[in-house]
Image 1 (cartoon, each protein chain N blue to C red):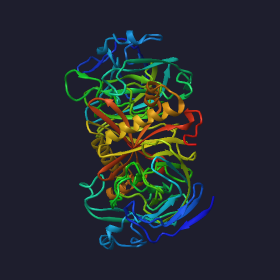
Image 2 (cartoon, chains in turn green, cyan):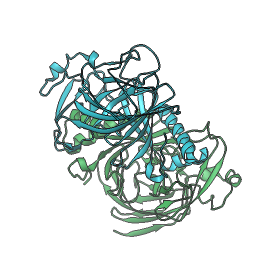
Image 3 (cartoon, rainbow over the protein chains, first blue to last red):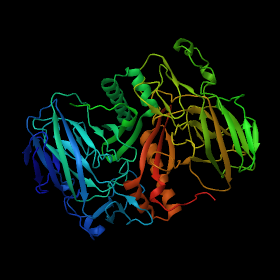
Image 4 (cartoon, rainbow over the protein chains, first blue to last red):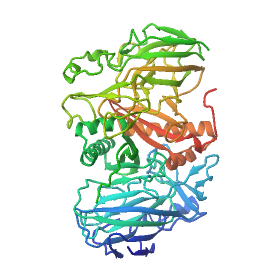
Length: 310
Length: 310
């Protein structure tokens, strides 16, 4: 049950199963990750939109990691408890020509700086936006070897932008490579579903995660147990990414039926009815091309308590 | 400020601007609607799945109405305050071959009866499902003349299946025809986002609605002010239906940018950023072919209070 610290530098901006681990830990250990903002510390308070236009976009996502977990193998599940996330009082959001959900309407570059109080920002008055920091990206190295852009999420997690992954939540990922090779970054002090303009409140952050390895457990894709402090209370969220929104929603629903029948003993058709009367469907992100991410959620309060991975 | 009561019979099961109003009211009046379940009282407690297979599907949705509102004209906004919804202790959900989000996986007919307590149902033990009755359908007569199936929702409202339309919420609809010609039904004691199996908890219900007419107000499509008792607090929800999920989400986002800039004075690009950091995107229904309904929501707590239609 050791505690480790991982400095931000050197970051990495591609998924690559052949990156050497910067740290190797045991199941049960905690790691304090120092995370740069998604630009890799190229954006700074007061930066102009013109200067923003010339940052090196190849460095974007600037992840901290990878961390290897002893004895992790494909077929295992990696549990990541999000213990704490702290922003540093400042963040930014932008409009980048050619990107974003309304790219035709908002075609001009724009850069906005946020002053962050502990729990809210008043920078966009008269709105008072609550802050709920999370990592837009938490993932393990993908199954394929090679160098992959970090924009699209997948079965390995990655750029899911699931805003429920705030402090108090837990993420479960299927290990794809020996050692798992976990990295995180792209911290957002706040983000809506969709992340429609292409950014949340991008910010540097201190991120504390605890890892547990569950040997030989089936998991088809990312699964989240949201925090009890979540506005809707703690939920089980099945996270699915696809190039097609409705396919992501359908696969997430299918996995939720499996989750309910496997773990709570419902007949599959009864689990299907339960989804129909009690499940939520959220579009977590719409901008991480070519993938859309949908989360299907069931409130834990409607079910007897279960630990899904022992 | 009169009170009226409208009995369930005769129901109607098509949208048709040429139906004669069963009741004509003034702005400010309240109407108690007696609503049959969506089958038009063909399903009853204890019915077998075999008997269910031979109900007359042409009667489905069995709406109560239409109600004409004096002086309502296209270009006006009809405000519908949902004052109360009471189920009657029983409901049903089904699987119908060829329908539903997982129609390939669940191809066999199935009928389930729910016993409803005041606030929960324990019929699908061990789940305890909270009840939050709402009308799956509230709508005004569409702009086109003719007889239209009630399954697809549209700019006129209709089969939106937006679960936030529970007691305490308000729906705003753009009037399409002289008199507006409002009808409602398809009550659900509970429903998840998506209504994935094709049903919520279908139930007969007593529905109390109060109507206000706002003359000459622009409204591009349905808008909901959810109840303060909503699990996430009261929100503004822009509701959009399209044959394509991502198009529905995009149009809803576009309308939310307009709503924020028109009513709270944000520059459109700042409204876009606000959506990116604070808006939710829910898939309200996926089964009302050929339309998918997406709701984009902003919590009222982050904005100064406004009455959008005066």
